[in-house]
Image 1 (cartoon, rainbow, N blue to C red):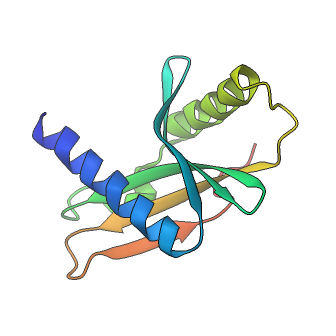
Image 2 (image 1 turned 90 degrees about the vertical axis):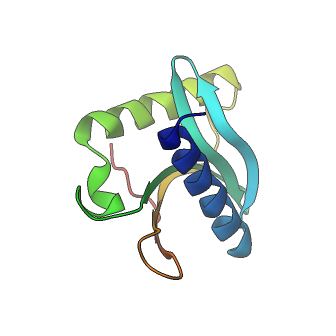
Image 3 (image 1 turned 180 degrees about the vertical axis):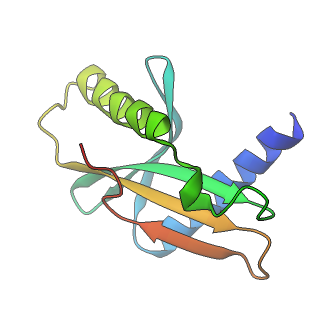
Length: 119
């Protein structure tokens, strides 16, 4: 596994633990939706939550929340709708959340944005 892949996995695992501590139920990691991937699929109560995770180890390229480009947002929206269609739950209540982790801070600093995507 490459260094970048290891860091990505570490970020996703940290985000998963963070969300579980907040009462979320994790129902999938790295969920394939067509040619796209959803980092974490969770439930908060009855609501389905598509979670994008970004982790940083230093600030050369900005903060985690600054790394989700307009193009990436379009892919996240498409991935969610692909997933809903394939799972035959198109009428499900859902939202997109973002979890950013700054590993340059000790202890790591987390940011959680709910409903971070608008269509």
